[in-house]
Amino acid sequence: MKRTDPEIRSLLAAEYVIGTLTGGARRRFEQQMLQSKPLQEEVQRWELHLATTLDDGVVSAVPPPASAWDEIARRIGMESRASSVTKGQPTNPIKPQRRHRRRRIGLALAASIVIALVVMVLPNRVDQPVVDDAVVQAPDAESLQPAARLALDGAGHSAEWMVGTYDGEAYVRAVSFVPPAGEHDYELWWVAGGDAAPVSLCILPKTGMRPMQVPAEAAGLDVGALAISLEAPGGSTDGTPGEVLAAFPLTAAR
Amino acid sequence: MTTDAENLQRLLAATADGDTAAFSELYRHTSAHLYGLLLRMLRRKDLAEEALQDCYVRIWQKSSSYAAERGSPTVWMASIARYRALDLLRARRPEFSETNPETSEPPATHIDHAVDIERDVDTEGALDRLHNCLGELASEQRDAVMLAYYEGFTHPELASRLDAPLGTVKSWVRRGLLRLRECLEK
Image (tube, each protein chain N blue to C red):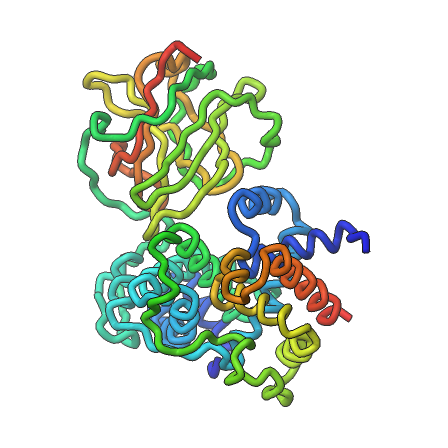
């Protein structure tokens, strides 16, 4: 039997929902889903079809430990670390997806993992870093002129991005992404070297593509390094990186 | 779930407005079900608790994006929980032990005789239809689909569990899903 496109789309969506679509196929599907309303709808249809089984007692309800709620309350910024969830009367909860915290200063390049050598020709821009959640859907992944590959692998991190240009603009595209434990974002920095402060380029996307805001002094990107740090959702709020996970020295060699 | 969907929708809407008391109540009504689901999939209490925390932080952050047309709040929340569990399973695969689970219960899938897929014939709508359609699948197709859905099994893990070649298992999953779709939407 020759399968029609809607059948294939539905099958992929179903395997995505139940989890048997894995690895690169899963990541490619997620990228396609970003740009395809029919795919999104098909995934939702399967979620609806299958999730009804959660209501029927097939899965036993198990009361979670009290520590779970305490940690949730702490993470969303509820002042009262309610021991009883019925008394979670908080003040100033952190509703936006940003949390504010101070981070230690300094980029521990020497202790980080050196993975890739890159050279990029990027436009002169001095805009402030973009930290919103918008993921740019254009240009197509295939249209991006690749310039560098950034990879995290090990110590609980597994993700990869491609940096490149399209029509004079710099972009970073998620190639693969496994969410880090807890609620975190990865942030990309450029470091001139010496005592210069790191410059935030962007929050690295989980899926899809995102523009990079590149300062003028980094236009050549043939000195210094790129670095990836682990940040609270929304990224660094004080202009300095948190835990540096990897660094990518820049050279003139390509 | 025992709490009706309308009440949960009300709590979610209030949560989206930043009402933490509503969020607390939402947690009280739903966390045991999500934790049970996460324990089933992750089989480790520490991972399940971590995933539960991630889920509710996400529910808190994304509550405004919930839309009723995406199904009941439980469907929406369970989807968040399942995807988080799948991420954790895939990311921690080397540490994940299937031979030494911390939960004593058997897998809660229709592969187990303890679960009677015909038992809820009096319930309405989608659940009835799903049960009926699952009942129409060949047993190996149903087992493969349900093990993947509830236990987070990959194709190779299904092949090992069901003692069948990888290609055969993939075929069971795909044919099972296609038959399920055909049945659900006729």
